[in-house]
Image 1 (tube, rainbow, N blue to C red):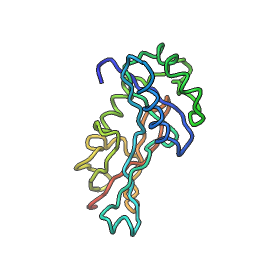
Image 2: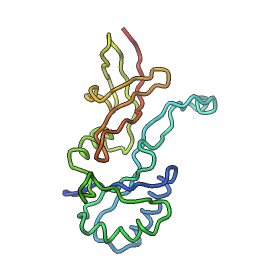
Image 3: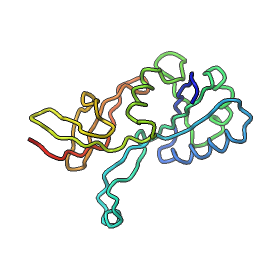
Image 4: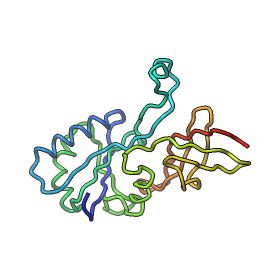
Length: 186
């Protein structure tokens, strides 16, 4: 997307994230808006212990990283976004509200949060699994989305192959699970 661009976040009914993304894409295709719009639901790979999936060679499935939230990347300034997209946002029964940051009326995600989150997503809109090892009580990431982000990890669940990371998102500190496979412990 051309600079400058912003991310706006919609709070939606849990389970309706992909439907909202699909409906928004259709809406913006037919609306005469001179801006680029890209709605998306950030996802994370999740280890899934299903015999059927393992038989197909799949042990990871994708799930929403932040259930109940849909992101919208656009080069439309906030002042115009509220008016142009507002009629869709307020007419949809799946969208609860447009997220605002803190005590202000600012609706665009702060640039530092957006850039940190873009680094984790690696232009794929999905946090892919990472591989690492534990040495003593330190975690070392060898590959994947968490390379260089070891400091974000607050807890590791080796059995379910995930890690809990803490991010500054939505104007507060948020914990979320991301895929992490620990291959050895020494």
